[in-house]
Image 1 (spheres, rainbow, N blue to C red):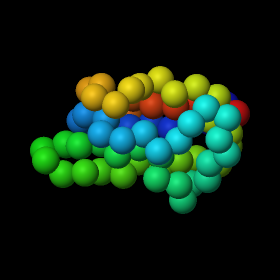
Image 2 (cartoon, helix red, strand yellow):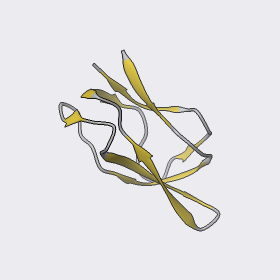
Image 3 (cartoon, rainbow, N blue to C red):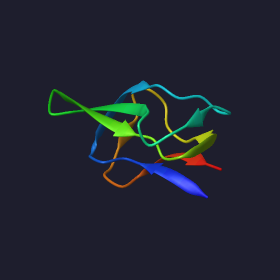
Length: 69
């Protein structure tokens, strides 16, 4: 099973994927705000099985944001 991991610690600003959606490594899956800068987290190849965070959640670097199948 593939996962999308946070690339930086910060707050989830946008979630641009949905459960059941096919994603690729070029898709902007999440936007994380850290130190007033927006950081894009790209997807992995697969279909979104579960999204583990919500907008406004604080996340740590390497935290699992979504599970893919």
